[in-house]
Length: 182
Image (cartoon, rainbow, N blue to C red; front, top):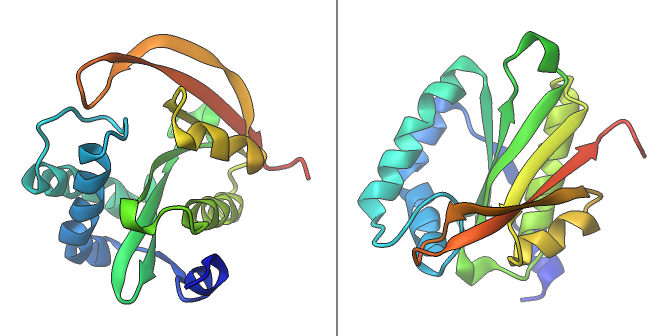
């Protein structure tokens, strides 16, 4: 299957809170696989499917409140990737949102799915009146190379920002994208 074939069969869906609750196990599979292969997404090893599902259940409140929006991509019926848009709640930041938990199952990588999820998150942000996106990622990670190709501007690096799944301190690179600039 080519990358374009995969993308053509992978529609992006916005999860309702009820759908998200039903998807906890599948989202947990993706998160557990990403952490187990070393992705720096907020967790350390050992990490289990149970911990991953607990994490996703904890995010349901944000979906119900409308402060978080989670998109998924399916392939052959299963969730293959996800990204969340976290809306800044402060009165002086209602134009801003954070991209979080852009995750693609390791078996579905290098097919353009992360880029497609990111593009849909941007469209959703604009629909919600958000014009500035921010995010951070582990310095040196494959995602750090993706974001500039999607129009994100590198702000800088924070050293020793977070503990990696393996237990070492990793730097993080901060990015932003102004959605009013074409």
